Image (tube, rainbow, N blue to C red; front, top):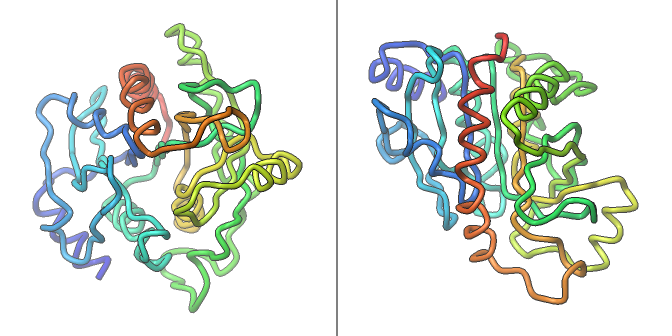
Length: 269
């Protein structure tokens, strides 16, 4: 099915994308601001999983950023939607088969580190997989990657340094931290957040890690940026809502767009 989707998209795009971007909750506005973009609904792509989460547009966009051809997923499939890990990572597989070598992932995350305020942009340096699953379980597809891929640098150090330097030039404040991935869809309890802090997590969310694992399996270079859309449970005396997540994502959208537009052309393949 990967190859069927690849063939369909290759015929539509005509140009092989070099970089790929995945947009998280409330961050889909990035693709809407790119001139001359080609938009392809997920529903038209053979085998592509539909995104049912609120705040995920559900289409691919293709555009040139700084002269580099970029394929953008506006919305992703989540494990909590009932998809298998294979389906969650389907888009990453197809991106790589189309030629993508640089992958930029964004997400909405809950802040665990008390130094991270709501609206902060955080470059992910490492992760803790607490989803209870791994997208590589099962027979290995040797033509896609090795049986036991190394994740000692799952998030490219070079890419992180470029992102931090670019942010400094633009006057954008970014942090760096460890992302914990949980299955969801319920938000975490205060006790769980305390446990995650002890484990060394700075952020928590319900996506990204399966995509990072598959990207490394296929030898893609990864940069991931979280938007702290809410403080995690127990930090503030108020309930967590998805409306808050979307509102904060919309508020920082322009800053994230500015950063991505300037970072993408600088990333070596």
